[in-house]
Image 1 (spheres, rainbow, N blue to C red):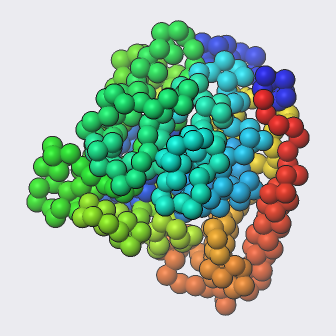
Image 2: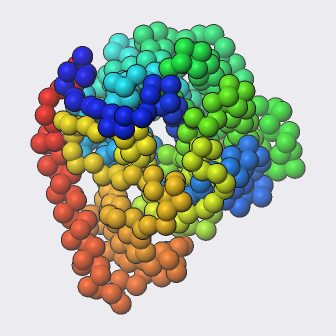
Length: 459
């Protein structure tokens, strides 16, 4: 059993089983910082997320660990940058069995765990050609969510069409349950609704049985193929066809987030349920989303430079909310710099959970103090690495390289959040200091890649 290999203890003795908070991690796919009303978008209708924001801690400076989806997803589950364990980009690498996931940790203290939506951290089949997603030259290694701590699954390997997902596919992919079985019922219409139809019964059963739960709800929206149903396109009939699909699909997802929040309140668990919301990276560009008419729209990163695949702010800075009425009494914004790697240590901090033998180092840091209303600055910088790009940001400054660290740009994000003015020549000593921190981190990642962080395999 996992607990035989990982010594985990609850140090806060006043947290009883029925008091452990339920945890829901909502994540959109390729949604830009500016694609939501609570960040100023006046065209896309996101009334449910805006209502959630009005009751939440809203991060104005929240980062995905990477500018593309698979690495970010791994960061949420491990608290570690995926450069440490070989998930360098989408469809590159997989979640290694030695990594101790958030789901595995929470299972040891009585949580029921569920994954719903896009997985993209390893194949869900050992035999079928659905592992050959996105024209890969060879199948991805088998590493499904049910082998990484999830009790209940309604999962796909990669992206799905956002309307009639089994009818509009350009390649074969399937929804699978926790036994690896292909699911064939209730797969018509809006994909976000299809996903939520599985999340809500999971939540209801957990509450009925008085079992705390962890639910990862990883929507496919608004990744291509982006298709909106007729009723959602009609909401945007005065816009062109591209915007009807893009905007409509986001509104459909927003509607399901509202449905989830309503059910949480109907069940009477809102004060004991933490709901996080973010995106896996910045918005896709028209080139990246090339294809049919419903795939060519670019989302918006708001005022930020860059988009998906870029380590400029637009590729990394994503919308982010945390709702927990028992702790967060009213809406407030924070410019605290947080990252998807921080979810793992934050949740462990909330539970006062300590561990031995987990892979170290952990790149994330807890932002529980920020949830409590604290105004502290981040105590360590956030590093980024994506193919030939490197970056490091602290509470104010950011260095960026697009040539594998040969040269660096420097930006003062406090006064130039759009990264328009490279001030590297004016501050060579600061660039050098930040560069040394980044290079030390990269060396640490290379040691991790070699397996130095692992003590023993999981069971």
